[in-house]
Image 1 (tube, rainbow, N blue to C red):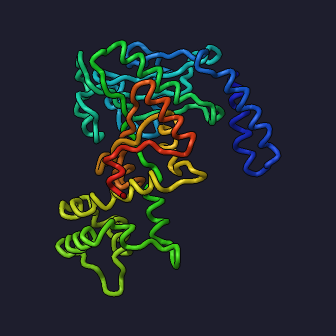
Image 2 (image 1 turned 135 degrees about the horizontal axis):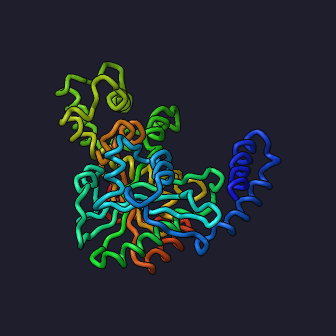
Image 3 (image 1 turned 90 degrees about the horizontal axis):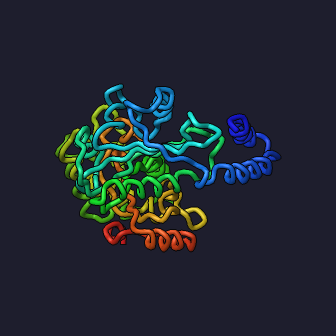
Length: 341
């Protein structure tokens, strides 16, 4: 089985240069989807003390959403107040196919710092389970629906272990938001965005320019406000997030832009953002956009620190939301709708 999965990974790599492999890739994915169906997979909790070292090593190496900082960081993610679960196949008993990290907290977390603050504290009655990282370990299983089943199985198990849980949500990255913003603001002619689209309104633009003046970064002559916004956000020496005034001015601007990106930017009726597409297709609601939620270097480089809560409701709402997604209707909270309507 491991060889077949490895071959499929090679096929996916080679098909970019040989389109004749598309049919083989499609057929292999279909067969692997049968072999790796949810009923066959085993759900295991992964802990620092009882899980074999080889599995923990895989978890550490394959963590891509929030790369591990130290051995202590790894212990924290597998310790009190946290949970880590993985799917395993009978033919690959020592290799987690996909794994998920979860924090058990009092309320829906809006920043990674809130999750870090609850490290090591195991509450008997947490109110919220926050899924903050999900990773696949097998490139050869790309397109095989594992993450969807993993989230639902873990949610069900946590609900049994902690009856006090009433909120199941994610704290998810927006990995291509910065790239989209830079591409959007670089367009020219009839495709160039208007200041109203970028800033939201004249008041927000005026506040930004006033804050720039106060932070000794005035609008240069012959420079448009949009170009100045880009230069401020992309300045690696005078970092905008170290200026309280700029943070206050940029918060509403970037939050509204993220809402437009997540809700309005689509391809064939579906979100262009891969993380959003994954959770909304699984039946979640796009619930809340959080500014400065990930204040790490990677967080700023990919999304200017923005993260998103996707809310998973009861089984009926999940089914209804999934049906809406199939019909090209995104389920979005009123709070997010208000950002761009």
